Amino acid sequence: MSTYSARLAALREQLARERLGGFVVPLTDEHMSEYVGAYAQRLAWLTGFQGSAGTAVVLPEEAAIFTDGRYTLQVREQVDGDDWQFVGVPETSVAAWLERHAADGARIGYDPWLHTRAWVDEASAALAKVGATLVAMDTNPVDAVWPDRPAPSDATLAVHDDALAGRSSADKRAAIADWLAEQHADAVVLAALDSTAWLLNVRGADVSRTPVALAYTIVNADGTADLFVAPEKITDAVRQHLGNAVRVHPRAAFATALATFAGKRVAVDPALSVAAIPLAIEAGGGTTLPLRDPIVIPKACKNSAEIDGHRAASLRDGAALTRFLRWISIEALKGGQTELSAAAKLQAFREETGLLKDLSFDTISATGAHGASPHYHVTAESNAPIEPGQLYLIDSGGQYADGTTDLTRVVPIGAPTAEMRDRFTRVLKGHIALATAAFPHGTTGQQLDALARLPLWKAGLDFAHGTGHGVGSYLSVHEGPARIAKPSYGGGGPQEPLRAGMILSNEPGYYKAGEYGIRIENLLLVVEREFVGGEAPMLAFETLTLAPIDRDLIDPALLDQAELAWLNAYHARVAESLGTVLEGDDRAWLIERCRPLNH
Image 1 (cartoon, rainbow, N blue to C red):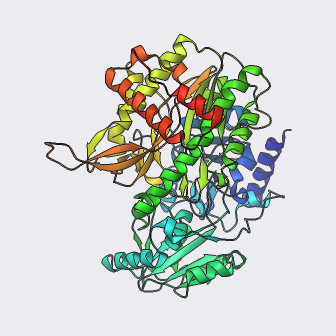
Image 2: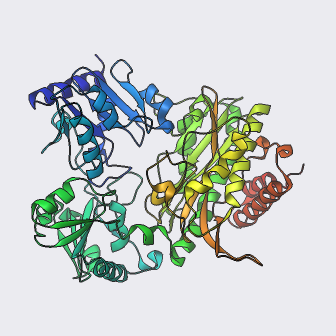
């Protein structure tokens, strides 16, 4: 029996001891985070799946793992199909699957600190149709059979300088107090980790690749706040920064504090808060108001200091990536390089800046067939050599105190095929179409998504992931609320209107299973745009990312004159900007790779 099969068997035995007919295991934490600390990696421990989004359901005789189109290939490589059924979402939801598979009268357990109230309501209704019930557990059964489960991080908090944040915490808290008055509310619970980090101008190191701390914050109507965090995380410098208006409590006291709002009205974001939070407030006699976290929009709409910081980070990071692109173009043809060695080399170039805090996510270093899995995660077991005839895809980013980066480039190892050049150029055409879009206020990411897909659609092609996601300011590389995507990729995000100051990715792709993957990703800033003779205020995008796009993969004949002009102007800007920080052979290579292309 394999390790993962044994773990599945152990969990089933635990469920039987607790008289449960099933249990749901999501990949999240008590803050509904996308990326979670090692202590919360229950799905990976149980199944072996290393992706960043997924859910498992374990029943006495069958089990299923649910992933979206990004992980269709990866989940099958990492999870044993003899033990697990592979189910695609959103085509099938966990609730719908439970309705078809749960036994009549079964008690299906869930951890109320790991699911939203909406999910609980949906699953409860589905199970009721077949005579089953959803049961909130006081303790998580997975934890009971995970003998060496890591402890939560004990890393200390750090002050995020007001000059980089662009606003003081006191100013931000005063704005929240005004919002609470408008809502006739007494307090708001901030459960999302990046909301606490942004509001209080602090950063942490509790979650891999995301500079946040495991903490909750309750902001009160008078502008004061109660921060619930492990006491040992608060240094003297952080305590002085927070001041007397921010009271610090042990994180373990949060659940008890929720029961103290009898007769009070407390705002709770239903999308960003686990079910346990409103349930505890209501059990204590308080009233919950299902309102969006008031941090979400101001955090997404970067101020001038944050934008300036991101520009500096983009220049620094683009120079590091350009050095890597030159290196890989030379070394890969010599042989001996692998996905892991290449990822390590890129990280080394970033570290040489002296300002890298962390990567912004685990680098997607994928050659050949691995590139066809959009969110492939290289491991010692999957590590493949980079060989001639392949396309090598590198999707990576850095966390710097002044900005968070995320960009993707593709490098041909040797001469690319005509098909590779065709597909790459179609992806580039979609990338340019989105980068050059102008649109009225109120436009959503869903409305823009087709621009990036149309050149592929015209050839009967598509890609199974969103086109763009929001990016934080030295925070999460995947930041809400806006996304550029089809409706099926990610809840309400694609329906969120884009606003000036938002930073989003532009990353159309193409993936040929078993052979190669292509993605071109830059970050875009939403800006105000005026047109001579225009009759309405408009928005547009400014490309922030600075790095050459591989010219050997481009078929200029497929680009129209406007597309070619955009590409050449972009490369001219890249050469001019990065040429000021690169030297010697790196600078010469950059200038050569950014030469204008012609039909």
